[in-house]
Image (cartoon, rainbow, N blue to C red; front, side):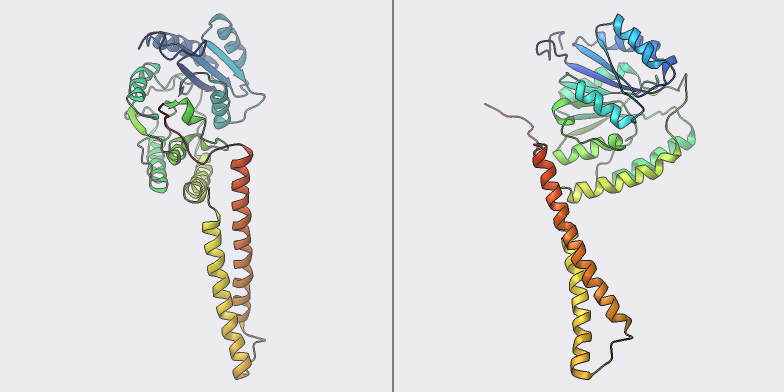
Length: 322
């Protein structure tokens, strides 16, 4: 690769997005490592620090660092919106053809970005870091392995390390991925919906030197809820009527059969229905089925409005050849 590779006007080849929340002690050594490692790649680059409402003076230090170095850019959010929102802000402001993401706690190694770029250029759309020799507590390592196994089983996209923040994306692909909530950890699974080629690559992992980890077990519930939503999106995101419709028809048909059977008993056998719980159950199934079917129609309409209002295509183009 040459220094001019990937330049389009003033646009850099590589944009590195780093969400920051209360990491003041790590910022100066991190910046020194980044500039050294990225300058050695021989490509144009920019580093986008996204200050996610830090309260320890990180924003002020980043302002000073960015003023002294033209390759650094700072995006300051008004409050702490969370890592997914910080990444989304970085993606929206990135100008590079390739977008990389890493944490700002010095646990990721910037020297791994070079080999990951080579893997991306060999045909991958996403290169996901794999902290094979992870430097964390045994509890965190075990919970991470369990989460990775669960996510792989539910989504069908099996990776050793969904939680590693060090990832590289093709810019045109990552901008197709909708980000909200805490969905940043599921980006490979969501990108798989667009036919992304995902390659996992071992990277180095260092112990945390300063500050405290922002990851706690309290996030487990949110991860499970997001995982259920991802599974629904992967299966029925563009055709919600297919699940709600069939469920509603099945319930309504069951209720209709039960009530029809009871009506026949009443008409031809004179059976009293006043105290029959089965009548209430059949009526409940019938009404609930009709409501769920109607919900499916509304969900289908909302999905269509979502795509049409944002001009978001239901396909993803890999390349065009003229």
